[in-house]
Image 1: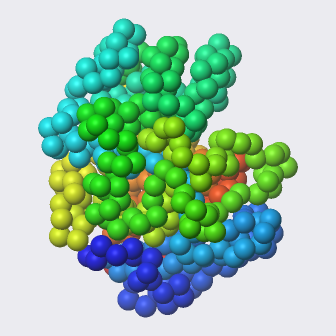
Image 2: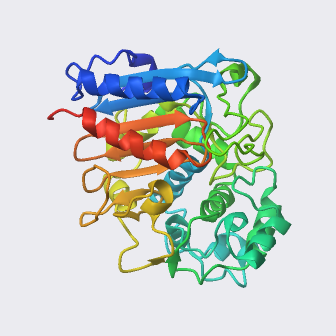
Image 3: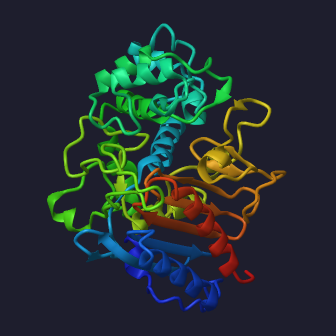
Length: 400
């Protein structure tokens, strides 16, 4: 497979021919997105699909900036928030393969600031979101919420330096003891700091050298450069569902500024074409362009459920991400369960993740599909768009 960004190889017309998708099904995706833009429900969006290593569909609609009315483009840049987590998780597992980290390593052995209350937390706990850390500013527990707010620990802590974040994470109350429950939160930010500690590099620099560069992810980084700003997608000023202002910093962080911290949980900016390259590497069992970036058994380990029989879950991963039961969690990804009761289509082993500003990707390893949906639409509608995206893509599938 070429190391050039796949976006450059895709015709944006929904031909459907020889791609495993129907022309009518792809046209329906276009029509739905166009209608949402026309109704001012979405500022704009980009969708890309690949099946059996064949580029199938790429479509951009709406506006990069709904105020300036600049048109959306296929290589638009998006704040991907929690879709940063799979990138950081892959980085950690690459280091595990190299013997630099081990899943059973205590984080305090690499980050001495974590000694004491966090002493038994391991790398595996961080990958599984079983560290006891959460997103406290979203918690219903007033004491816990206040503790996170006092330390400035928000969804994307790019405004904190590494020492400040470590200081904060070492001191906020744990929601539960490590290794007892799946709880979504700042675990992957701590994992990113572990990558920095053992490599001696900033997370973004390490990812650029070992992931972004080799995969041809030419626009993925933790900061938007001046010559890229014209391609940076923006959300509406107000949520079209409830009319509430979309507040900074969580949904409009200044992507052009140099972050104090490369937030491994929520800080990256990417394009649909770049992220599709990442998804295709995973779908290929870690193989890309003849190079084995991850071993196939490592990818299999990362993309199978590790919750069942091991961890409780106050809110199940599938419910949290797209209001559907039937999904567990692997090492950085939500995973469809073989015996699950999901109310969305998909094959056993389907894995995915999403971002709070409306982005999503998924891979179906049985049907050999990789899919990316990019928009900047935070708020109440984002889960419904994820559900729409999964349904419409499966409706468009033809026989292998």
